[in-house]
Image (tube, rainbow, N blue to C red; front, side, top):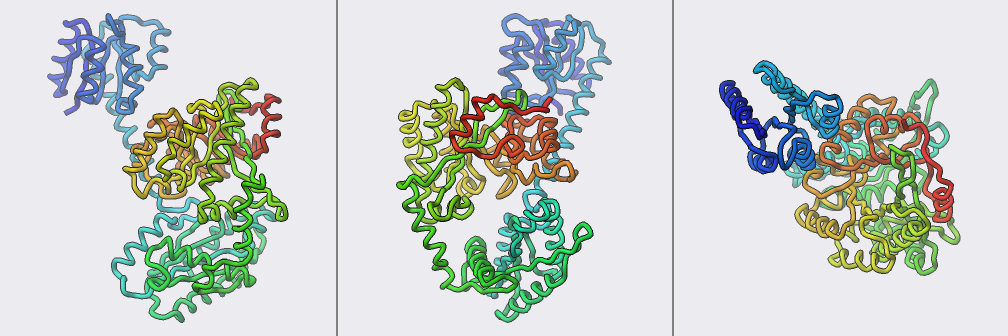
Amino acid sequence: MKKILVIEDEELVRENILELLDAEGLAGIGATNGYKGIDLAKVEKPDLIICDVMMPGLDGYSVLKTLRQETTFATTPFIFLTAKAAKADFRQGMELGADDYLTKPFTRAELLGAIATRFKKQQQYRSELEQAKDQLDYLMYHDSLTNLPNQLSLREQFKQIKSTHSQQLMTIMCVGLDRFNQINDDLGHSVGDRLLQAVAQRLVNGVTSEDYVARLGSGQFAIILPTTPHKKDAVFVAQTLLEQFSQTFAIDDQEIFVTASIGMALYPRDGRDIEQLLNQANKAMFQAKQQGGNCHQFYSIALSKGTSDRVALKTSLRYALERDELQVYYQPQLNLETGKIIGAEALLRWEHPERGLVSPIKFIPLAEETGLILPIGEWVLKTACQQTRHWQKMGYPHLKIAVNLSGRQFQQLDLRHRLVKIFTETGLRPEYLELELTESMLVENTDVAIRRLQALKALGVEIAIDDFGTGYSSLSYLQQFPFDTLKIDRCFIRNIQDNPSQAAITQAIIEMANTLDLKLVAEGVETDAELSFVVQHHCHKMQGYLFSKPLPAKEFESLLFSEKALVGIK
């Protein structure tokens, strides 16, 4: 039975409405004033609220504003009763989130019609929300470009196969396209994307229906061969796949030739969990690439020792901090209502004296692996906070800074104490720092992660979930964790105007985040069309090359002082 809360100080009106509701088989709950109405709403969780506008003590506008601030009542239908019929009064209520108005005196038919309409629209909303959830659930387990299963799906599939084939030899393959970045650079990302789609289909065609093909990212795929009694069986599959690549790909009336390198790890010999096996297979694939590509390689313990180049890079990294080789770059974040810079994301860069700028993709994993990420990460935090406070003193008092937090940093038991020390030393107030975390850092032990996040939020800092939808995404995490901001990964934004299904999924993410009162940041906005989409769908902030690439502190400062703003957002 639907429950309807009636907040009305006039007893006769209130009782008449309650009797009418009872006659219609609806459960009516009466409240004599706004304060009691709010208390009853929190206890009864009504399906719809009817509220008088003009009441002593707390008027209807204040009741609505108070309830809408709570997630529980964010979408509860709300109908105002009023003797006032001025457009300004209607506008005030609608801006606060009212769904309908009934002007006193009203008829029985008008009241029941308004209630029926609200319930119908709520049902439509719930149906649309369920569809959005289904779309997102599909996305959580599939790559949006190729429609192949993603890494999360691969993990779960491995568990299922392992439970039924625990004693059998299983092969995990990593398939990496050789020199794929060069294709992107020479022919463009659009051609590169279509090539990946064609490669995905060719891989699926090259294995049996029992085998499992997934995309890991960029030009890299994974394959599970559940039953390979002997190594020669895996070799046969690898050779078959390489032969598939001997035929060119026809993309946009041009033929593209690309080869692949395949690395293989065997279960249970090389590992018993998918992460370890993927890591071993990836090492073998890298070794195949080092041999010139277009070949396959099994993992061996010798590969774990790494190449001399990797060892040299790891050694150099140990001295990078003390030799002042590390820098913090700043990518502007812009308010999509004003077009003005309101903050920045701090990004770590390494200027090697001999190699030049070393890609973060190369040295961040090394820092994580060696534990150097702890002192480096703390240096980034302190440097970014110190620089932001400097800019605030120079006339930008509300400038905010977003800093990525590594998994190891998040697991530090004294992280809260370290942050307090940084705030004390730099003078930056906690509310101007946003800590960005990835989903993979939170899923291992959600209870512990929630407690740690709550302790950080108690300081006043904000928490952002980064790269949402690219890892272990689950809608339930958005509700469990005390996030303030959701960052939409660039893979959802790129070429969104040419991909209706991707646009629909991204719109669903935005609507879900707005329902949960999360601020939204669109990452990787590079074109006017992408900007138009995120503005149209009410993202709050953006960052991307359309406005600016990440900049050294002095260049960011010059950009800030120039008062450059984003144009074309209205």
